[in-house]
Length: 453
Ligand code: CS2
Image (cartoon, rainbow, N blue to C red; front, side, top):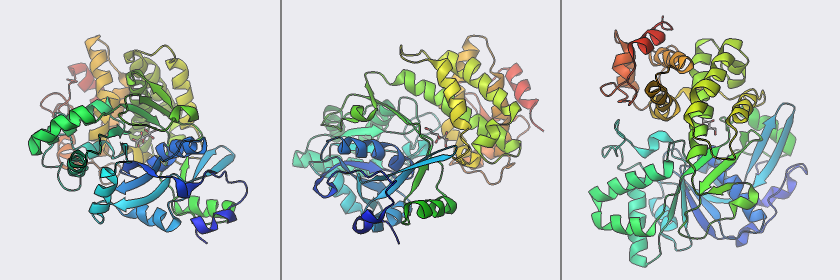
């Protein structure tokens, strides 16, 4: 039997319940790009904030592409469980914050209705790095930012809000980009300048785009996960998400309308997110990409297997301690040494089964903020980064097809560059396929080539 509002009481007693009166909560948040991460992170925080007394921040989720999440959640009245897994333990919580999921190209008017409603004050986004439609130089790619992307939807919602006097929105980017809020504001501004310049000043005056750092490892849920869960909780949950006990959310506190008191449920509201975001992107995500490309190359499938391989662990520790951490100007409450140690312990969690191939996708969108900024900073200091250079060799092998078909929006041009006689020059530097600020030296090229077959 499948989870729904009608049979919620049948859930096993061990499942923690959200506990508030769901039916009386108004929608306050529209989330664009609902996948597995939002349900396990932002929606989970909002759910607990409503359980702690906040009202009217229920969420409408929007899928920009696949109808999968709508098919998982709508028959369950938006209900789903979050299971935190670690070695030998699993704790499951029922989340009530998501009211329904709309599929943008099937229900455009309903999506616009939610975005334009006066009671909606926050539009959060997890559209992945590529969803921002940035050209190689970082500016908005006008060819990509049409139908299917979030830009036209938001522009139309802005028009409707302006016409109705509904007030502005806080656009909350929850993707792994450096300065994600500022990038979103700039890109949205470029879109409006081109398509509706008068709306640009409304956007600038009425809306805000706080930056955020989001962190929680959320592997794709498998059929085996769902079967194990059903046996434990007594109902089938097609929307179940599996994650780790750890979670962090650091948010710039510049909202234009009321927001949930996420600080009451251990989110951190700060004036400057950058130190946390840089540490997370360059350390956690940088190490993840290293684990992915080097781990796959050595025959591993999962993160916990790769980190248990002494050769890879050594590389990860070098990246964390000697390469990434020294580029981060830490906030007073950040201890990067301890942060790095905690990351290694999180990677070793044997209960997560986090697939390396999931992390390996979209390297063109991820590596600039994970590796290339670190390389450029060390280069300016006259230093090399051997662990990241080894990772780059792994990425080149990946682009050459060593791990199967390459899943990346720029796969064609990158794979051709990786197969050329001088892949390092073809990929990096201002004229490379990635148009990177980091220009590899002859020594860097030699270090990478030494790891290539
Ligand atoms: C991962 C991230 O898939 C990836 O590229 O590095 O999704 C990572 O698991 C999260 O950022 C953790 O917060």
